[in-house]
Length: 167
Image (tube, rainbow, N blue to C red; front, top):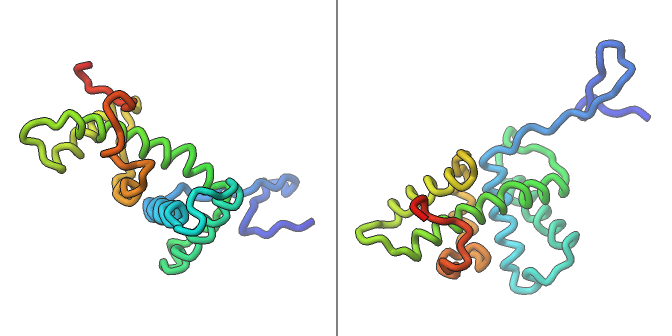
């Protein structure tokens, strides 16, 4: 069976075919994934009452619709599994941790702190909680925080997985 050059490379003796690794996810792809996820989750007809495979098929469908509106240079073909894993291992995990940090600070209601200061401190707290990794999904968080799962006002200090550096 012949495999196209766009999906694999050969080694120097042409005896082994190796699949090309897709490029790293770009910020715009993560944002579109967050939008697609939010759109499918808030679908008034189906919402979250979908089997996993159907849910992720719908997320991928919505993502593709959003991606097709982008310039061709930004479009990277990916499988539904790659999107599901990106969501589960990275976006959901990191946004949930950031949200816990943000919620913790919001619930403390520090005197004189505005939204900008809470975001700044939540990013610092996230970096501490994540072992030094900076939070780079702020645009995704802005989209996802409108969903009940990520609503910082629904989180309570008892449920928060983030603690302040002084605790």
